[in-house]
Image (cartoon, rainbow, N blue to C red):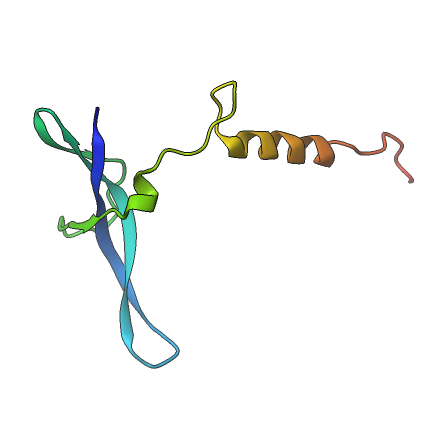
Length: 97
């Protein structure tokens, strides 16, 4: 079983915060997993204009936990999304103009 150990991030720019300090803007580009064969990086994106440098940020224990799933094996957020879509589709068919 693979365990996510690091997030792969790249600096995509900088900005000035409300205190006047320059901060870096980061983009999450993938992850590094630990498997029985060693470390395996998986890049999902490379920012345009990137200089090719990436940083590895340790993953905290909350991010490593799998999302809660219901009895059908779907993430719990799936049920909320389906219920929200059902509410949004409840329109009158009559057009007032």
